[in-house]
Length: 119
View 1 (cartoon, rainbow, N blue to C red):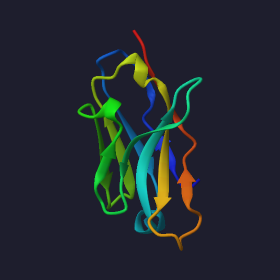
View 2 (cartoon, one colour):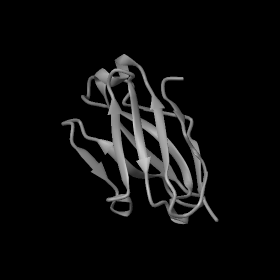
View 3 (tube, rainbow, N blue to C red):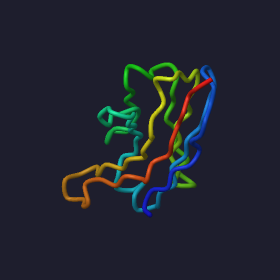
View 4 (spheres, rainbow, N blue to C red):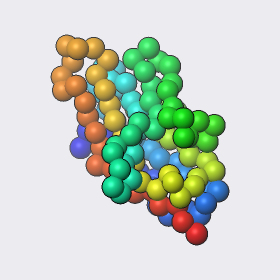
């Protein structure tokens, strides 16, 4: 697997979780990393990402609560999720998007990790 997520689980409302996504040196070199999620019956949506220019971008619903981070030495991207609510319940996917059009494949996506927020 090119992207391997970990860190999901069951947490109470108001709690925190930290998701990790292990990638490779090649992916870190040529791809911008991010996190998406998909809740039951809903479309997949962007949660947080690093843009090709190195900036961060967050969904409005998670701003101020979630933080995307990276460990370049370990080729790992993180998603720190604080003050979780039941609306955050979803399968979270690590995503890698090519930084330029001549890099293929255009995307890599992990297998997903379940996050459930419930009391």
